[in-house]
Image (tube, rainbow, N blue to C red; front, side, top):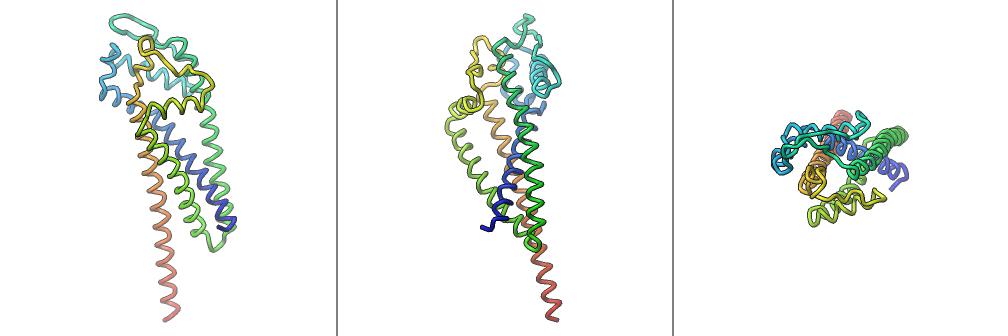
Length: 237
């Protein structure tokens, strides 16, 4: 592989990871997704809280993680009693999650814009090979990232609990993420099947985006070949 195609592939990979992170943020902060999941699993009834209070508690979490609130303090009626929804352990864990998300947003921006700038520079340098460089870069980066996602997907499908716990061990230096279902409202708001659906939705959306981009690049290649064939025919006449 020529050096410029290698660099273009790395830049394309940066962009794709940036897109992946963008999808993660979009899904994680989608109010309607939480509402659908809660209703589908009867989560409000299981917790002993109204759907309205459950969504109010969820919005407090999402607003905090997006920097719209300074804390996750929120009160709600639970089994007929007014309670503080989130305890100290949950509050500390959410502080860790917010820090992780803030760093992920910075990484996303660097990957997207840095990758786009590098790819544009390489394509500009490639002169007449522009489309070929773009096509190869996308193909190799998709193959690498696709293989990685496939491995994670298989792991999650086989043993989601193990996948999810190891994910937390990788990104957190404490065990605050272990919450007691007998005392934690948060863990009851987000059971294992909720996160499974979350990860599955992210993977599906990413696959659709990758397919759409790949299809667009392929269509550009088809148009280029048609123009070249038409020009050759004109020259032969």
